[in-house]
Image (cartoon, one colour):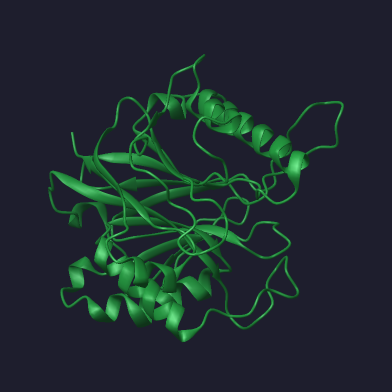
Length: 304
């Protein structure tokens, strides 16, 4: 069984025969949210916006990714640098769900939207919670009027989730412009961050509660060090602030390259959502290096 919610090509698809329905969700007190840049999770075939993707992920990397994700034990996990829905679904079907004996804990749903990155890297989400809908902003144009219109380097993906029969929240995923490219890239990261704040602070479709006024998180690889302008914009000192729940947790990148160690990965939370036990997963650094050049991050969200 597969179903789609189509809004500017947003896709919600199944990893198992039956998707989780809200009435089937247990009444839990908390659940685990994770975010992971999985370093060029590519398959063998060209994609929508990339005729020549990087080489496909090796069997060793796929094995390591599967083990890392299983060790985190997330209920919902967002990704950066995923080529497409097939590659992500294959990873979960072959290396994650098959290793989870209890079917009710298997991941059943993923959301992945082909954006416009020339390398074909996208953001995505996989979960065993109930997905209620998704939003994509990959065709949204923005930026200073005097400049050529910009689009997000990778999509800003929004997903509405139910963690229990009654408790829902919004999960946004972003992957800002790469650090490669000097001042031009830094400028675009700032403009992207400003546009994300604009989206959060305006009522959706012209009415209703602003995203920032709801229980929401923004996760992803922001390609920027803590304290730099794009991060200050995302947190905002002028409007309703988002909380950087990993501010004391140290570097997430790189696990093994010549670049300086820093934190590029973030979980920002609205003030209404109850987030605790945020961490960077460095428990097995050898395995982490085999899986990606980033460490995964996670946090526990309390159900009200």
